[in-house]
Amino acid sequence: MNAAYINYPFFVDGSGRTATTDRNRHVRQMIEQVLFTNPGERVNRPDFGCGLRRLVFMPNSQPLAAATQVLVKSALQQWLQNEIQVEKVEVTASDNTLTVTVAYTNRDSGTRQVDQFTGPA
Image 1 (tube, one colour):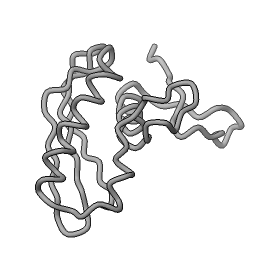
Image 2 (spheres, one colour):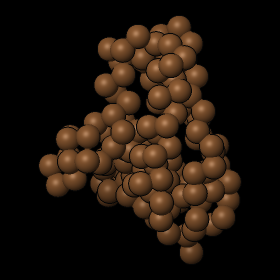
Image 3 (cartoon, helix red, strand yellow):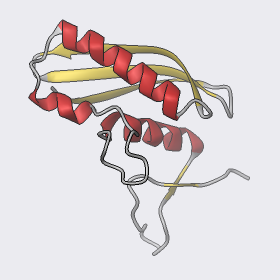
């Protein structure tokens, strides 16, 4: 039997129950939480997150992309080290978009995943 994980963001599904998701989607959702949570945003974990949303007001450039790459990789290694093994983080800046590509291995299943996250910069 496959385990079910609480979906993020939390919502109630059509049957009136807490929405759930599978393991791979759950891991992706945890990565999204780390990427898009600003440090200081969570009361009980003030240092959680890497704060990509703060980059919205910074000029988009290659130096910003390089700094973001280091920021993202270190945050993922810190907060999700028991869930994933981060293999590679690539950040590209193009026009008004910052794209973060994360290659990782799911420690639970051993499967390799590559996910992309995009946001304005």
